[in-house]
Length: 116
Image 1: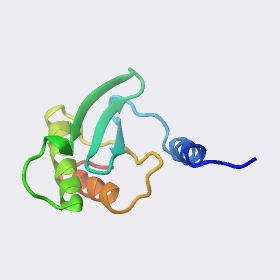
Image 2: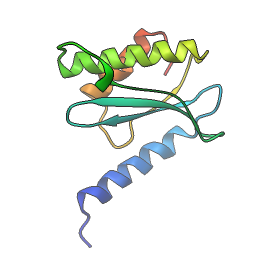
Image 3: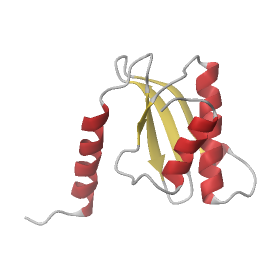
Image 4: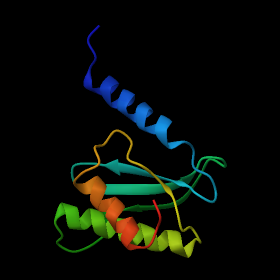
């Protein structure tokens, strides 16, 4: 049986999720979603099934390169998390490789003093 790309993505996503565990109120999960133009992330409490904070690079203004835009998104999300009293999180990259914009978003969270 031939495996197509969506099945491969799903397998990678399940493999990453199995190693992470679930997010809680004290240590929620930061789920990353990447498109061609933007990157967004949301902070999820899996125990309660609620999104605590979400932010997208689409709401940022200015001419930034994609890596800089992802880092600024991470910094802004980190500031929103601090305002909610969250200081650490589980970083869920889903099926995306940890490089480029995804890694820059994680660096932005670390720059905002969020432990991931």
